[in-house]
Length: 114
Ligand SMILES: [Zn+2]
Image (cartoon, rainbow, N blue to C red; front, side, top):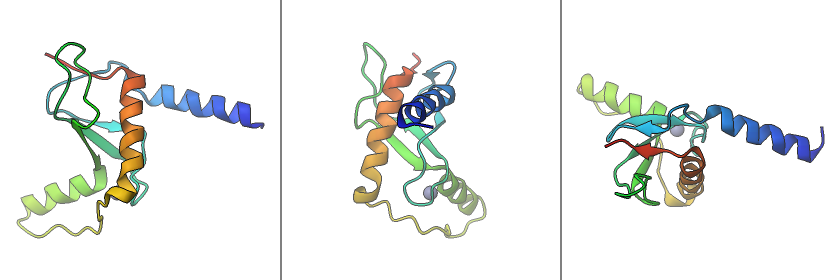
């Protein structure tokens, strides 16, 4: 397989993971194809801020979260204990993933419903 074919497959994968209906509700969490920069697991996004006209997220108006970490936080809250997790959330390790997530949302046409 040459690099051109590989690039085509990568593009195909990016397309196939995009939501079929890119309309999300305010406050809705949705999964992304971007791996967690700390554990390599799945990530999800919650949009906090979007443009009123296009209803697309603003470049800094969303949170990229590690799905496994979020579930652990929820479980810890339910069980009234401290969460067991070691993610550091340093900007130096998360910024590239956040930038990729924003590009992915733009390419997928993700918008927030009224
Ligand atoms: Zn993680």
